[in-house]
Image (cartoon, rainbow, N blue to C red; front, side, top):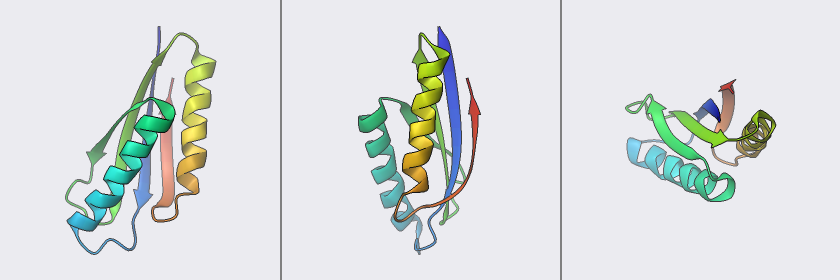
Length: 92
């Protein structure tokens, strides 16, 4: 059994309130869960109105599959129209 984790930091510059941020986070989380079948949660900076830190976890039977799924997630998030990419940490 292979367990992978991915921590992603994004910046929502246009968020003027926590309500705006939560709307963006909810959209991203729902899209990632549906498209990539991963567990996703906001894990840090919950009270910061522009910083989004998401934690993702995935279990698989091959490290290559887990790693490639995380890489596709990174590509998808880099092109997000609202949230600006900052960095990520991947562990498989």
